[in-house]
Length: 136
Image (cartoon, rainbow, N blue to C red):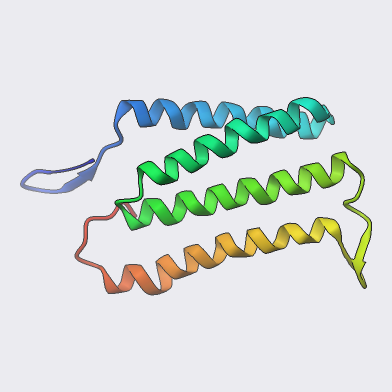
């Protein structure tokens, strides 16, 4: 939601969205702590609420390109991070795919996609829409 007064424009996040974002952080931290501690069931279980909330946040903020691009990049980052975690949990992270590339390196695909989304936003979309209300 955006509000405008006589001196500045502000973007405010509805309280229900903020609560969901805060819960998202809790799930994300549980996932990463489980990864660090090699608690496989908890780590894998936390992928689902973390991803679902991330997708919902991206959907809810789709009316602002800056929010959409950043939230999509986060969703893709979580998917790459989750794949990497699973590859370690199931011990195929160091298995060679081609040459020196291992299955863990496949996480570079979604990581790169997230970077491309942000490059699109900052390099293409934002410079062409400077007068539109955005959060970044």
